Length: 314
Image 1: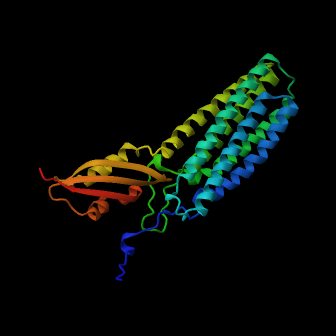
Image 2 (image 1 turned 60 degrees about the vertical axis):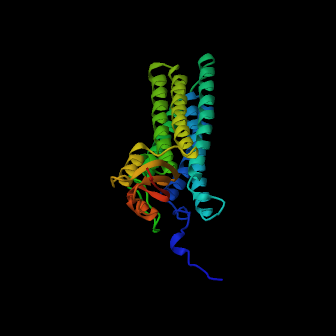
Image 3 (image 1 turned 180 degrees about the horizontal axis):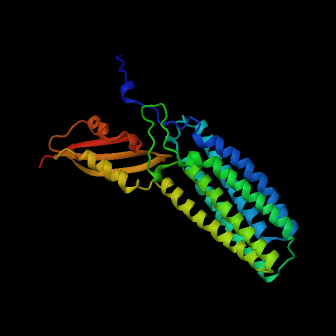
């Protein structure tokens, strides 16, 4: 029986997910820092009677969980990148981790709001000096964590050493894990500032109500980040169409010949900064599918393209 070499027409579908992403090690460091400070703030909040400090600790707890999920997603995606059960690799694992983390954030937000309301109705004695010291330490940890994550979050896309591994430079297609991790620690830093302000107001001006008020502010902040992360990760999980500029650019280059018309175009995320696309082209004198694929700019991050070509007979 004659054997045909199919290698030129086949490729791996891991799309670089087997390689450790730049944010994995940095996220691991931040998880350890956040978990340690979380325990300290929760214990201090309960011991010193500060709802703002307790809220900040719970806020940090929510971030520790979300960051832990992000780290798990990195590791799981890397270890199962070549698992044939994943049609387009494991790139969506980080979106699933982000979605789960967002649900947990929403639960923490509701708990923080409830506890703050209870403190309005039944105030407790606050040990301001100790609480301020712990809150300041928490802020310092958040700032260090943000610095650890910042360079990778704001850095350019990183290409993997594979012919199909291109990373999109558009914000919408970035590493959801790393982006959410960075936003989590920045939000946590803002909540720490709010806790410090509330404690200082209570200590020097007798404004004890500021403490539970800042607890409510913290819960609103957590809820905001939860909604943002839910919305963004759900779009990936539901194969939401890629951002308009990407879709428009693909359509534009494919219709660069006057005779070519794109009649069907789907572009969806299969991982951080990478996209798959399904295209149908109609023309009186159509080119080969390979020609249309080659026309797609590499820097868009399209790693898998299926092109249907139809001859127009009218």
